Amino acid sequence: MRDFIHRENIRHFQSLLGTTTDENKRLIILKLLAEEEGKEATATPSHDPPNEGVSHLNLEYYRKRLATETSTVTQGILTRLIAEEEARLASLYMSSSNRQIQILVSPPPRSSGSNAR
Image 1: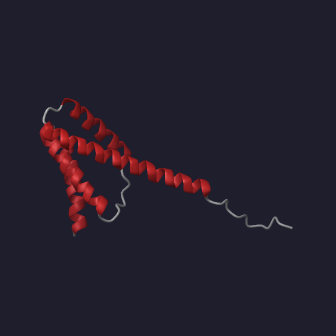
Image 2: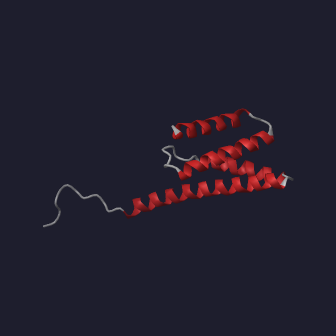
Image 3: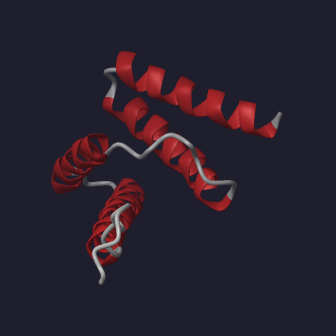
């Protein structure tokens, strides 16, 4: 049940981001979404792969907003959101590198016939 509520919260926040244009409301929704996604990192691993493109778009948005923000509270939230997105991207790159390393070091497949005499 907890997993269902967690997934629905994420879907709801993502839906709100798609329809909300007020910058202050968007910032609050982004914060709530980041917190909900943070719960996912401490819970069981997600079966949905993280989306690198979304992380890059989020980073771009957060950085632009941070450059013009005057409220220190909002600056703190944006700084935290940037750090979370950067960590998410780093984990994506690390898991991708690990897969490539595993592919490179795996032994070649054995042939079905015997070539040794």
